[in-house]
Length: 431
Image (cartoon, rainbow, N blue to C red; front, top):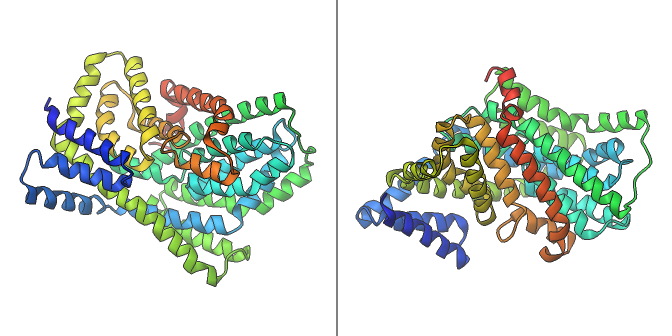
């Protein structure tokens, strides 16, 4: 194994990150420095530029800006409030009712909007003050909001699963979307159990039990929003349109819904489009830079060498999966999700394939691992959004976060070692 390129890649990337260089530029510059070890400077610069450009030349990637736009339309279109009211009638009477409402609403909002940041922002802004007013600790509310917001990245439609499909060399997006449902719901249930037990011990208040008519009424109000999931996933699975076409359908549907709810007007559209463009630009730059790094690693045979190293440690499937999970948890602490998926999928996928793990299952394992990273310092973007909205600090939020982390890790272990949790639904639909 040639250690110099690996050393240059790792040390330069860590150096640029440590001095505050944006992640995308840290990836691109460290990739350039690595290839300079092997080829002349002009060829190196040309190659990096070319790989960044061709990395974005994918029809499947069009789905990302469309889903980002549909998420923005959902965020501004009064969807969160309707989902919260529906969730309140279902679980409001249980211990920690408002916390459970937060988790269910975040799961629904995250799935519809496809963004953990949007979910954390919406749920924190609406439910945070209400939880505090009802006597809940601010830090507990922030911890519940932070962890539950990430579940929407596992439940489809998910931009990260589209990125994984690209990085894995074409694993079916429809199969990945179907595979995310049960793991996402299972993780949400574990969070609800922990949140409910914590609330019971602290004696937090609950709401009055809702009648069947109230549940039906809020369901009818929320139904048009929930229907988006049926239209998008149903259309993909039934073969009416591809994931990319489904993202465009989602934009059209959410736009119509926003106008129908009278929450969006024509004058709001420039702001929504600008916000969506900014988010899409950041994601696309990360993808372009990460694709150049993936190519460099392939050129230097780093994935194959890493695969050999891992398999030389042990050929035991359980041991390999535990090592990969620990490495991904570590990566998630220091790296944002999109570049982590693009960079580490080519490294770990050959290893898991060699021990008989389905690429669909591994996609969900990887995304759930990195979801935990979004809730941890120093890079956890959802963590910082959550504490910013709650007006608290990382130090104060750590204590209530720990049992919720444990719940997510237990769910991760079940999904890792019981493949049918992930694969049952895709297999039922013939994937």
